[in-house]
Length: 173
Image (cartoon, rainbow, N blue to C red; front, side, top):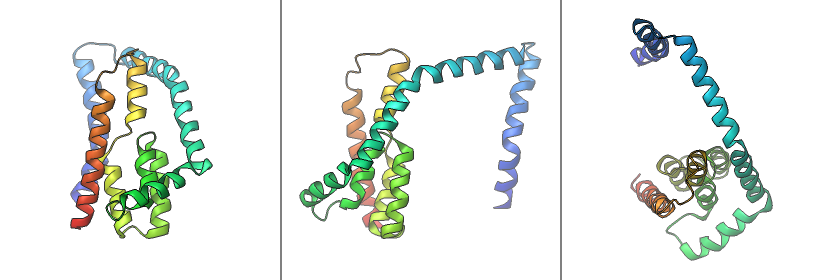
């Protein structure tokens, strides 16, 4: 364990020095390349800022309005014992925001406990799914793609697979 701590402490500076050294050996202006990259990154951040703000507001409205609780109670009756209804808001919010889903996960841990079946399903769900709406809006919006073809269907299928796998694995544990 101590070797991992030592390795992780020195790994990032070693990688940075390696990149700078390689750039200097190639006789390229490392600082100018860094400045251009930082400028491009800032420009990209400014382009996607409206999308990020819209997603954050939408998730906040969903949480504050009680819609997620209503959805989980209705779908909890439909799903029965197969899927815990307490986890459903996390599954829905996860498609939009990882930080909001993590906040809901912490609330669930306080309510049910991290070692409960609900806590295990939720933790596995966050590990096995992706913020698909966020990723699609940011990535496709940045490169101006309008027709996403089968991306949304494939992402939803992958999310459903992650949800099913999280329930299956939690039952094994």
